[in-house]
Image (cartoon, rainbow, N blue to C red; front, top):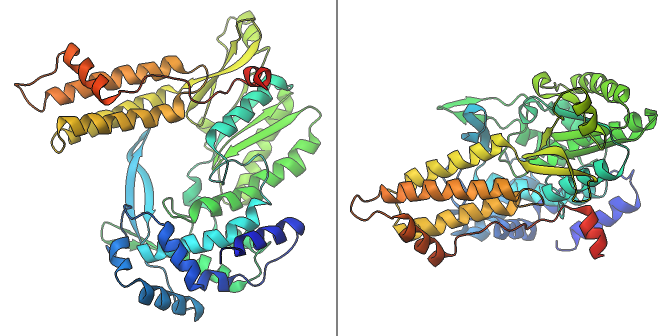
Length: 441
């Protein structure tokens, strides 16, 4: 099975119109399922049956052969997913997740590994979310360079309302049939989509949507938006524009850049109608067209206004200048994300003080701060990162001192403790300055 993804990818690249009619045997292959078992982490949340990776692996070969047999004779049926919620800024209830059982995770990964090589060679360059060798930082880099170096004067910031909960199953299967001609694969995915959700002891039927938390969900969402948005923009919207037009998408978050205001507003009007055709809708309160580019700052000042900003992938983008007074796209951590990160850190510290020793609590806090900096420590964002580290340090000291009334840290002792564990300092890890990189090359 190790060479199968490469062969599938080569066929998909050599013939973009090829419909694959024989894929199901790859999914059923015992060796393939065994490789998926080894790839799955063992510390993830369990589904409704409570089976962990360790328990499933106690009788692995028999379980894999039984699963393969059920897949081959089409008697395999996914179990219902367990509803769980994770914190989401601006929502009291949180972001809903669907937690699959371990065996279902095996099948989801097996399907993903077979389908991904087909679509990776087909996806547009404007798509960055949940793809191998692509990341949020690459999307931010390309967006910043485009605005800075091309004739961009207006940006459309858009948001799809509850995208993962509104994906139409009928359209999803129609899109899959453009490249997948093996009806057994289509039938298997249809069963996964309609598996149902268990919440508060009640099973809810899945008539629409693809649950977040599923291994297969990111790929299916990319396929759906590839046909709904990506191809539409590159083949319909951009050719009709008199000026320059660009588009960037990460999962269901996307922005579009235009040279002329009229074409930006035409795109917004057409976008709403386009999404309605595929059972989706825009969050109108989060969708807007703003002036953004090399002349936006001066134009706003002439009108006596502040230059407009937009938020994308957790960063607020604003018009800045280099040391030589040239236009530059700058970014800082959005206030919403910074506040959410600090609240999450405070809630963790409050819980951890009852369970962890001071040394272990310091080490885990260091890992959390480091994880934040790994994403947000980019060019021009040192100030917001320093603010996060400063407040995180104060929060940590507060909850460490509440572990014991007798042994409280003063600031001198706290500094020594932080030096002992190697507390992270703010260093720019991701260079998103196109001019500096060009000079280096």
